[in-house]
Each structure stands twice: as C-alpha cells, then as structure tokens.
Length: 396
Image: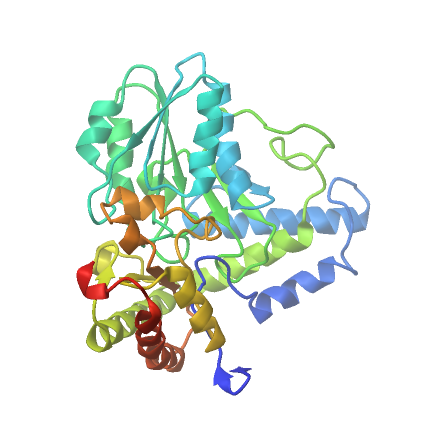
C-alpha cells in the first residue's frame, strides 16, 4: 500500500488494527440479510441468536472456557468496568479492599478511582524497572478485607508479560475466595491465555486489537462468580449486558479470534522475528536511546518501546507520520495527555526521558519490508529533531 510515493508502515496495532478481509466478509450478511433481533423466535431472530451462540463457542475455545461463560460487551473498557465494579459491588459485604498495580491501563485505573470514591480501599502494587509486579508486596498487601485482584497479562505500553500464573497462585493460597481479574486485551493472541490453567475468575478481551471490528469486547466470567450488572434496561440474551446485541460485531470478533487462534504459533513467530529485527536495527543505527521494558520471553512479541533522548515523542510521531510510518507515544488510551506516562514513571524513568518514548506495536499483518522502511526513515527523523531541540541528548 502506498502513502503518496512512500510505503505506509503501520506500527500502532496496540491502539487498533485494520479489520481483516475475512472478518469483514463474515460480518456483512448481518447488516442486511441476517439482520434479525436475537431475542425473537421467528427465523430471522433465531439466526441472529444462533450466530451469537456460535461466536460464544469460538471465543470460549480460544481461552479454554465454556460458551456460557462469555458475555459480549460494547468494548474492552466496558468489559473491564463490568468485571471490576460488578464484582466489587456484588461482594462488598465480604470486604472493600481491591488490589491492582500502578502500571495498569487507564481503563482499570479510572474504574479504581471510581470505586475509591464509593468507599472502597484500593492498593496499587509497585513494579520493578522492567515493569514486573512485585509478588512479595502483593502477598503482604492482601488482607482479610481483600475481595478482588486485577492484573493485566501484558502491559500495553512497554510490553511486559506479567507472571499472572504466580499472581493467581498467590490469590488462591489465601484460604478464602478472592476474585482474580485479568485484563488480557493487550496479550490476547500474542501470548497464550488459558483460564482453566490460570484459575482466573474474570478476563477481559477486545475485538479491534486482533483485526476485528471496533465496538465489541467480551468478558469471561467463571461459572459461579457473582457480579452485579452496571446497567439496566431492554432485555437481551445476557443478564449482565442489556440492550440489543451488536450481532455483526460479535460475529466479526469471533471470526477474528478464530483466524488468530488457528494461526497462533505462526503469527507469534512472525511477530517475534519482526520485533527482533526492529530492535536490532534501532540499536545498530541509533544513539542515545533507552529501551523500556524487558527483553526476550518476558516481552510481548508485538511491542517495541524506546525513548530517543533529546526529542519529544509527539514530534517523533508527527514526523514519522509524514514519512508514512504510524507509531504511538505513551499508553494507547492516553496519548493526548501532556503528562509523562504513568507506566514509565512507575519504572523509574525521568520525566524528560519519558516524554521521548515512542511505541511500535507489531501485527502478524506487518512485513519485514515495513520494518526496514521504518528503520530507514527513523534515524533521519531523530537527527533532524535533535538539531532543533534545546535539550542535548548526551546530557540526559
């Protein structure tokens, strides 16, 4: 695909992804031919209901869950909100204490802010310089009022793969029921997700991060996990999510999940190769850079995040955009904010360095040619910006 006379290299797949052709093809009939409302018993309605049930089966298989444990939501943010607040409100007689980390996505942190205003106590566990949760602090923070722990399996900003299996083990060892929620939106189809092996109670997913449509997410809710609906209104197939289902979006989500699951090993291998190609190229061609997050297996195959000292991240983003390269700065949900990234601050990065952070997120649809093109234009962009910067990279 050409961008003017240049290659278009899209490396912001952590924010959103283009809808796969197979996904769009699967969705189209549900806009015109199979447009029925799924709660009605005539044939058009039943076709829609069956499409939702098939989609539940597909999504459930990808995470080793049961179909009836899948609730479709309007997006990943709603899934997170429903899980955390729904569980907190339903179980507040057992306690009012919630634990998360200080590097979670704003979709989690803002929900926790709301709960604190409602009288809940929230503790934010620290992470190390690579963004890995402090498991000893987690053990010490759990108390007899703790009802919920929420941790992402992959940090969406710096790509850290959290030891959620260890977190789950600590939660289970407490001798009483503490609910465990995993925000798997950044990790889904990039790292393995098995709710039975982990023993998680709730898990949040989003379609548009895996080449599905925007406007649809999913919540895995283990059978027997008690949560309260956050909204009430028109009856639907779900007891937790009122209103008419986005049938076309749900079908598209399922198709995207099916495609990604069928090609999982191949896709991950390709992303790892592209990630290493990009990181190697940056470190060979650039100076005064700083990698954020770990290397190797503890890093998402899709994530590359560097600070280029002496240059503002927003300026890098805009200059790369002029060259046909799309990247992000900071978290996918807070790129319009002027404050330094809360994630980078939490891992000890100075604000002036954090402001220069640039995030590349890779998809299985990217190519080596796109990586090479980005590597060809990036050094010139950084060099030109450093020439006009009042801050010297060597002084940072």
